[in-house]
Length: 282
Image (cartoon, rainbow, N blue to C red; front, top):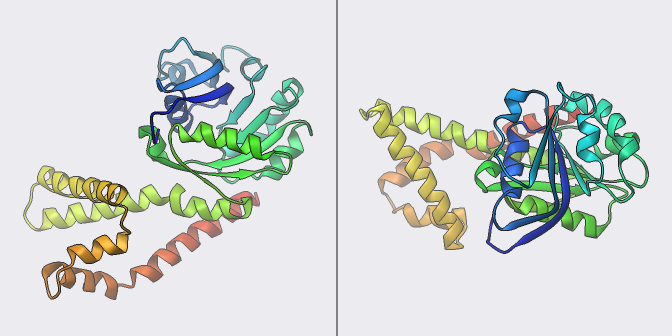
C-alpha cells in the first residue's frame, strides 16, 4: 500500500490466484485493509491453493475438487475479480452470471479482454470495470490502470480504485487507453529488468564478479528509483544533477543518446501496442 490509512472494502471474490491474483490478495490481507464479508478465491489445483497465505478472512476453493467452486466463490460477493487466462474468460462469465447479484462489480484482470466482452456475458445489472495491474503489485509498488465500463458508476470505479490502492498506485484512464497503458506500466518492469541485465553484463565485462556486479547494479537501480520517488524532482532534473559537464557520465550518456533511445522506446512500445490490439481482436 502507498500509505497506512485503513482501506475498507466490501466482500470480494478472486477467480484465479496465479501470480497476479496472489499479488492482489496479499494487499487485501494487509493489516490496514478491512474486507467486510471476507475474501473467497478459486484455484485450479490443490498445489496452487497451498501457495496462498493462511488467514481467517480467506476461504479457498479448488475447481478440480469442487465442480461449482466458482459459483460458490462469487455468490454474495460485492466485487468479483476475474484473473484467469484470457481464453478462459467467456466460459467462466457464463458460469457465474446466473448467481451474480444486481450491483455486483466484476473487475477484469485478464489482458486483452474488452469491457464489451465482459458485458456481453453478464446481466445488465452487473457493472464491469477493466484493470491492468503490473507485477510490482506483489511488493506493494504496483501501478494499476482502471477503466470504467458502460454500466459502472463513479462510486463503483472509486471502490475498485481503493481495492487496487492496497497494492500500489492507481491511474484512471479511458478503455481506449488501457492497451497503451499496458505497454508502459504493464510491460515496463520487463524493460527495467532488461536494462539491469545488460548493465550487469557490462559490469562483469569490466572485471567485477557476477555477485559484485549484481550488488552494484541492483543497488543503483533501487536507490535511483527511491530517490526519484522521495525527492519530488523529475527524472530529467535528477539526470542533469548527476551529469557533470565534460565528465564521465556525460560521455556515457552521449553514447546512449547517439543510439536514439527515444525512438527505440517509441518503437518498442508501439510493437507491444500492436500485439495488444491483436489479442483484443481475438
